[in-house]
Image (tube, rainbow, N blue to C red; front, side, top):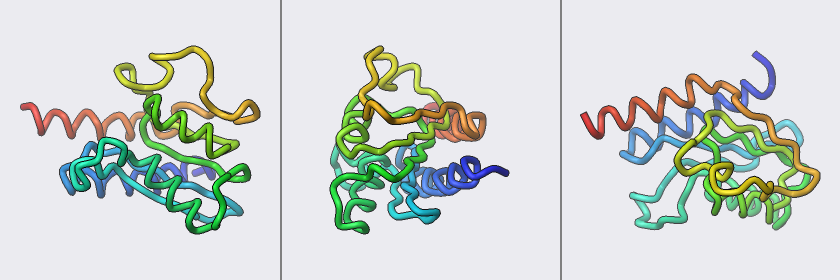
Length: 146
């Protein structure tokens, strides 16, 4: 298992927490200096807040942990392609590396824009543990809508 798979598995653990709480199973972790500095999972139902996506939770936690608004030396691992709102927040936080599990053909940022919303020097890695990330989402919606 390489480093990207290791941290994506930690993001998957966050996604499973979301699923257990009845939330859409998306998880995220922010890593800097070889350690997790922020983690989060969807809390939109729990908090009744449409902005409480996994990425937003993880970015906020990382910024608080580091007492800094920019995360320009960090990597975000997220199990599902970010929506446009989250992609914008990722860009504003200046994350320099974004590792994405499954693509989201319905609401992912790449379905809305062909211009990257991320920092110009950001590296984007796609499809890490994609089958497992996609499977969580598919299973969740199969149980929700039998």
